[in-house]
Image (tube, rainbow, N blue to C red; front, side, top):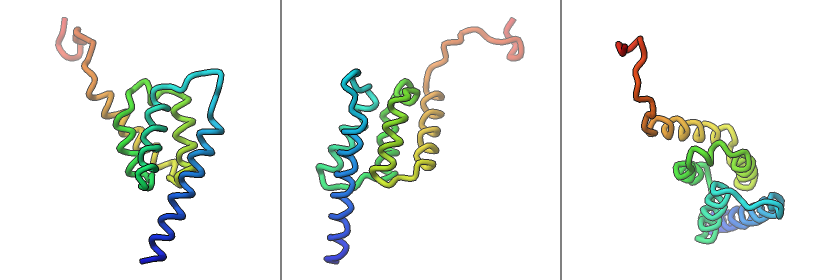
Length: 123
């Protein structure tokens, strides 16, 4: 049990160190961070400050709060890739979660097309 706690503490410290490295490396004084970048960085910061590990399940929950525009933002994509490195998250698994989120977000958006097509009987 002592070894498990020591290992958990080691992993948490490593995640904090790598997360700080990511924030430092991706910091850009020429632009403000996007909404998605801010949300993800704050969420990870709170998780680590609480002494909890950031993992694929946590990132999956975070993705649910991203808007469609956030998901299309290349800065958010780059940040997510860096977070995969920082937290030892499988990048392909995160991409699957992101695609699932995009599909569910698109299905929930109301249709702006009020007219029908010839195929569905509209004339």
